[in-house]
Image (cartoon, rainbow, N blue to C red; front, side, top):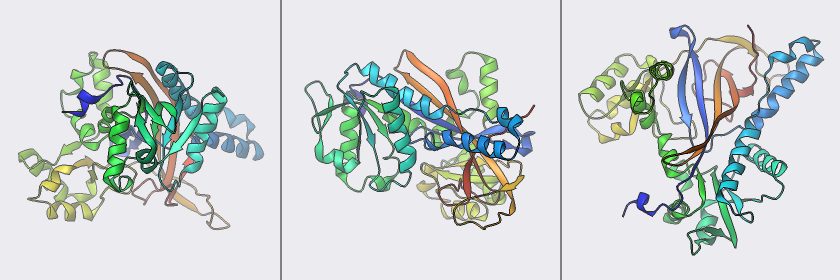
Length: 369
């Protein structure tokens, strides 16, 4: 029996973040780095960054420039999406469940979501549980309701469950299956979780695929324009050709596995080394190849705890994330909106995002004509 035949809840909630870089080789047009469909982070913290930068501008005597730092409503919009799903579940006594890690390093970002949910609707309770705790205490009710400690769960918001280490035993996998089989509205559902994989991103970028989902030729062209080169590494003629391209010119490509959470991609000479080690291995099919985006470099100062007392002028690049909310089923979209943004600025020689590692920081865009 397939999982799809076991699913009780037809509604899906997506809190997505699509990440972009300007590509200097394409007249600085934006190109999509990836789309995050599970645990799309920093929506809470990043909404406070514009206020910090407006304060700094004001203190430096540049009050006339405050209008150039746009307001960020990511937190309000993301939490509004969860509350809209909670309303659609239609049980005023139900709660919202945050599925969290055993040790949560990004706790502040998560807590801001909890506080905002309570601000928008003080009657809605948020509970936090790890997958292990869910395995120990969750059950299905008579109508497939998800019940944890006698509380009915309307919405399950995954901030964990996106990498193998977060499933240390079969019990955690069983907990995930129980959640998917329940009547609770999942964020993301297993459909949306899988839609965020690199393989799906690569498949959507293939020629003539977008026409299956979009009717307007202008929209198809606009969406196709944001894709950079994405190639399958299947063990066939096309995969072999893509691998040979990257082996010969590794600095022009990034090797990406079907993993989330950062720190999993391969860059530079290691692209060639890793591909050559997988020449005849089925392991290669678990990766995709992406043309490397070369963003424009800007000069700036990186200020962070533990840094030099007098910050140095360094080379920086910035990555823009756009948050969106979608609620729908197979036939109807109830909500589909862009709700805010995130800007990460990092040292130009840092391959990964680098905020947690200390080579980058959350930032604000400064709009100019």
